Image (cartoon, rainbow, N blue to C red; front, side):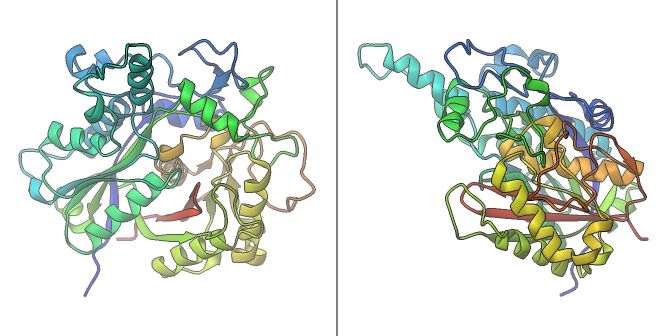
Length: 417
């Protein structure tokens, strides 16, 4: 069977450093930090009092109030980002075969705020089970792609992938496979998350996963730095329109890049910690390269998972050295989580977008907040520290890993006609 080629024809983003693609890109290349004191609730008794919130966002600028009240924020974010991506793709919704347009979305947690608020409301009562009739439809993780499909009439495959922080990267790989196997012409894919809540922050704090640098939130996300002390929780959404190449070409679509391949693996090691030698990460990058039919020396740029955790950053860079050997020294490596924080299930989507935009513009966004070298990290690697770097990128990879040992890697390449 001849596999079909898959290209990216639309992008949309709602992030802590920009509420659309242009704002997001400008935030990335300028080294903007999205971290700030939390505004959603009183943090007085919390260990971590900051996060990367979406800013200056009013859902009623996008949908009406009645509809918005029936949506958890993670679904609101999904609608906004996907609307931008679909508009950017210039798809003619009246002419396409909607039975061959799917929506495959990623969310690691789903409607956490809805779940939290409904249970707290119940706990304050007399034990009578009084719940909002939209409680379950707002909370469940699969509801975001459902809303995207209903909003646009897309009648192809429709579901959510859940693999913790690898969720939206897995969604992209599934979308890629549906198209190259000929099962879809177009898939709207990506991910969204809205876990900056009392439960979300409290839960991650109890695991000692979050930075507690309350005196300097804007510098708290510091991947690869010797003084890193945990990740910074972020929120938002990223959306990509994936399309079969001939379908896109026939309608004269703008094409950002081609998806070359996708890899998946499992650490099979620990609930939350990566394998110290990065064996699962080695496997996922090799799987991705094999799927793309490429060699390690073909890769110019890697957007790492790079969460700013003591164990994770070291393991990932060890894995990169193991896979790429001497060529690793020539690759521009970065972590855009230094600016956006960690968007959990949406991380793979917004970081894939960052990789695609870096390829388009020939600029690698920086890894900000780096001041002190870690003796456990190879100092000869180009981690694109603190300042954006110009580079002609033909091939870029995006790594995303999740609790439970879920690993996903997506490879993007400049389109060759």
